[in-house]
Amino acid sequence: MAEPGSIVPVLRSCPPGLPGGQPPTAGGQPAGLGPAELARAAALAPGPRAVFVAGRRALRTFAAELLDVPAADLTTHFSCPRCGAGPELSHGRPGYSLKGEPVPLALSLSRSSGWILLGAVMESRAGVTMGVDLADPAGMDFEGFDGVALTAAERAALAGLAGPVLLQERARLWARKEAWLKMTGDGLVTAPDTLDVLSRPEIRDLAAGEAGLPLYLRAAVAVSRTGR
Image (cartoon, rainbow, N blue to C red; front, side):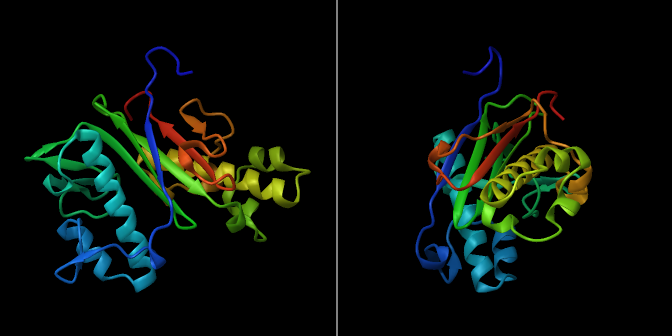
């Protein structure tokens, strides 16, 4: 149960769709994307393009449904600590505007193994940000992961683990790191082995199967408490 006055995000998952995740098109272009998103999609190879477009279409639909407005009425308005904000950006913290005004949503998106996880804080207070992340334990099975991704304290916490349990814990910690860095807007400009996420009250691990996700994926959500 949420604490009184706490911010409770809305979470939604989207399973893998059509083969390759390729969405419908309009006039030869992926439907439902803004100009900056279309330009970014056009620069990608077919496989990554399909993944990118599916995620952005899902995010736009999610936001439109929460706001009860047509998805076509939303204009992309992403923000980046280094590049600024506006419809010309296709990267950074997700956002939209409606009739020239930013919509009252804090948004985040993550993709893994064909699945999409979406998160939103509705009627967000000024400065409140959030991040979500998905991680597949199968992607954590390589030598050197702990050295580049985990702090000394995190490595100590995983000491003695092996096999599937080790991979699950690696994925859990990685999802927490990514969710935190999306929340702050820092991204991987911050070296992951310098960010300890063993105990941060802003981060919550999603329970297995929460938000309709498959049981094998690990996921986390982070919501700022100070409006950073």
